[in-house]
Image (cartoon, rainbow, N blue to C red; front, side, top):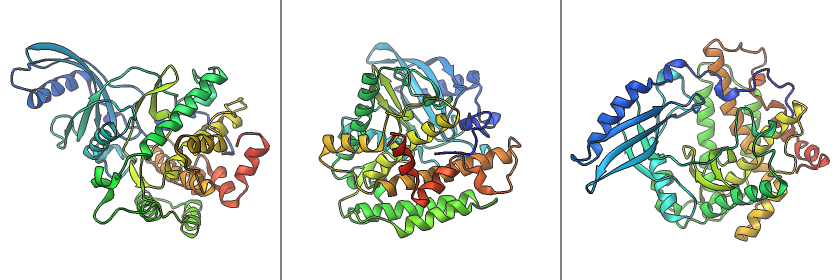
Length: 393
């Protein structure tokens, strides 16, 4: 991405996050304690001993950290837990719907059928009675995550690591995708993602995914401006869908290192499965590559050195080939599709900022897309040549 400017406050993940979406820790503690009593054995006597609502909560699900104790098999034990809660409608959420139980089921399936490190998932609650929204509870693990705010390319434990450690983290992150995509019969293992019908091909699943993204864009723009650039992007995608006759893989959907918790530069927990889907494996690879480019280009525009030797497109493809025997194809298409999908999300984020009086509606709605110039360059076929000339592809 080569944006025209770096916003004075690049904390775009915090845009339009209304205060009412927060939960009072004392109230949350009581609610969680009462709810635990309904899912544990009558003799468990649960007690919630600590609750924390992180200041940097997510743009979609609410995250609540809590500690609890209960009695099981005659022994008192301590548990470090996380509750992921669907947002209230009044928070003007990023997405039109949140299927928390589906996330729960996908995480359970991935943990059962692959070696991808997934936190243990405990319970899924499909009513909003206890916490104000549907939620699920999983174990809380220790580790570090490459930060989004400020972006890890601006200076972080990752950018300051040795070249050897960054390379190890990169290889391990690509391995997560390789292991996930190796799941056999994902349409049977995760039937809620597949819907009715036979096992989809990569192309069939991709077309269904694109149709879903178009519906999402229509929802985003239903009560506000439209984006000529995004609509041009969808037209390009429709005209250039690659042929993939192989069975669709289980895709993480939000495959980026900012959703992985690391210990000693190795993945300890793979998080945030709300965008999981069936599709070509390149769907995840393109997203991982683009998400790094998004931050890398922001760093370049801020005059920072960034991480030009990290998650380069060719390196990711070579690592995936080495791990799986599959050479990723059509990465021009899949990285552009990733940029387009991210553009719709950014358009929604900025629309929320306008709605909450935190930003003004620009004369050109395309200016609401932080990586507008990247998407334009990709559509014009000039983006990757410019990164190659800088040695970053």
